[in-house]
Image 1 (tube, rainbow, N blue to C red):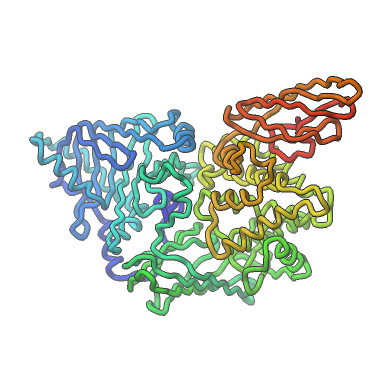
Image 2 (image 1 turned 120 degrees about the vertical axis):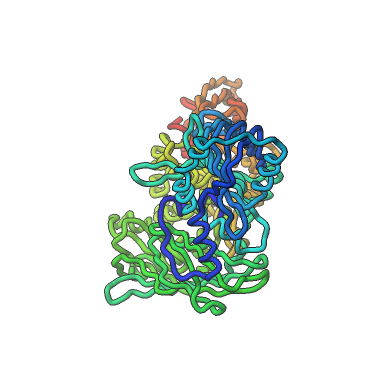
Length: 640
């Protein structure tokens, strides 16, 4: 788990605990009680800490190191004048930095900073200190650090589990965190964490109505990797891989749902002691056992999905471990949804598109909670929707058994696909006997209207990062726009015959078959589409769909179009229809292929690039009007 996502789970809440290994408990106790070492206060000047793209300069001031933990110094407090500069590697990250700070690069001065680290920061700073004559530090200057023990202890609650991994495991993947009080921005954090898939991040914890919200300003790969998104799309630094995930569910006499989960994992590297699991927030684990460890220590954070498992016996590379999460109870009152109430027919429908159902059984329940959630083979539906809405939610959750459980997103960047595709397929199910496609039309119309005020949250490739204090509804933008992305691809793949969706179904079936039990990235999805793309989809003539994904997944904006035309008679041979299409509200490099109609007659597709496209068609009759995309196959800012 990356440090930013770990903080999203754990920030500002205490951890529920089970018995832990003695060595882990001792280290955590020392980390929790760590204080400033008053014998280790030094004057510093012109020291620069370079951590990948992060450049932190301590211009002048005092630094106090923390007391050693197990013989290692893990932090320091700086008071004085400093500056941080960080240049994000691409346009998307620069847009996000600008969204939160008002500039496309991070450049902020600060007067105070807390550092935590397991890298060579202590050695690096003490070496610089030893090379300069020390200034005398007065008692008043030293007294500045008296209040900081409490601040360090408060921060330790959030960061100790991450530091613990570097104490317990032999793999050298250190972390550096700087919590800086910016002169303009207030407190914010920067991180270089070699256990994270995206090693570099910057974020700010905001208090909204008594709740902590983490604004992620930037998160990206280290300098050597950040230029090629596709090359690191499947990067996974977790030390274990989940091989199987089995769920057993039972309803208690009190109509409470009890769940036991069995995970079979395999080690990817030697010496693994800490595992991070992601479970539905309402699933409360009461015990974890394994064959190697009769009882396994763990932390679970209330109201969140994070479970941190602490192993007494390390798991080595190639070694398998079975964990059983027992007595896990969802506290909602539940009832079983009978197969004839929809699940059986939906399962059959989606098997026809996506291939055989991937699990031995499917249990669908309805509870008193207000939202749906699911595990492999188990779906829990809310109780409050009307029957039509409930059918749509159930269909979407059953589709998610294939797209979301059997296939998993390679990273949070691919979450848009796994949120959007099941929603779209759910609407397709409702339209199974409706040739007009009213359910799909409805979710598309709703998505376009709901997207308008929040589309500027950022590229949908950013996933859950779109949720922030700047865009509280930003997460919705990810799947609202994503639904249109799926629809546009389906429309471009359509055939003009008795089975227009055959190519779309074939694409999805191939994806599920190829990536069953594996992770799927946005780039995998793009390459799968390229195997099925039609000539009209080749907007750049390179047999690639880069143009489409750059527009709709990695880019921002919803285009608006204006068409001008004239029709000229060609002797007695009909008419020439020629004109231009102007494109606005999107970047100039936004490329798109638009269907154009004269009255009800399809004329052809027009490629619009650099904000304009020209066309010339022949017709047998003089058209009264020429319009763009009357079938609404492309997301635009409004009717054309």
